[in-house]
Image (cartoon, rainbow over all chains, first blue to last red; front, side):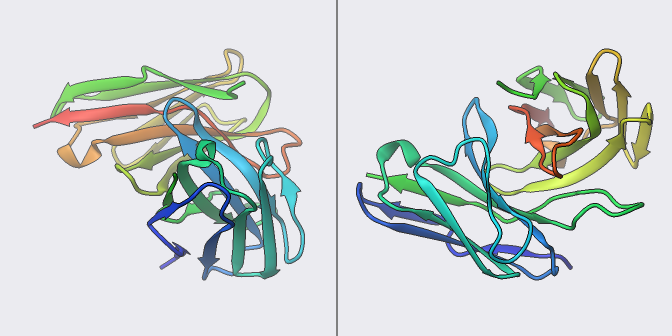
Length: 116
Length: 112
């Protein structure tokens, strides 16, 4: 059974703190993604990675960085948390497209981050 | 701007009725996918339709795609209380490098 796990379901941090959100997948997927979800805005892509040590900016990368040192793990880092980063953070993974396949994404349960 | 926008934003129906949700998008796509999200949880993939397909079925789900109108619909037949969730469409744009762009979702409530 495929599985994507995230390190915390709920997290409360203070403004200015450095925050690490961890995501681990056990499906040997090359692609991994970080989204944030806010009411009325849907899911917005923060960063994604096609392979170990590779990363690309999504639609809203400002204030975030990522790290992918191992294939199964993709970390999202908030260098200095701010109140406008209070949100639900979702991690996902997928396999790369090859002939006959498609890019269904598998999601973790989400981390609800509150920055005070 | 949103690539995918669902309509309606919220829908309440009686158990046993059919539920229809619509998705519009703006640019040419490789495929369109529908996902479900139960309250406060991650998203679960439901069904994918490729740009050269017009209709697809999976159990009680039926998806249509009209690329000329840049729109898709998701029909859930014989709804159940367990179908209560938010539903999102996601599009993979041509030359989108396997990224998906999600809409804002339709909140479906099934009344027992």
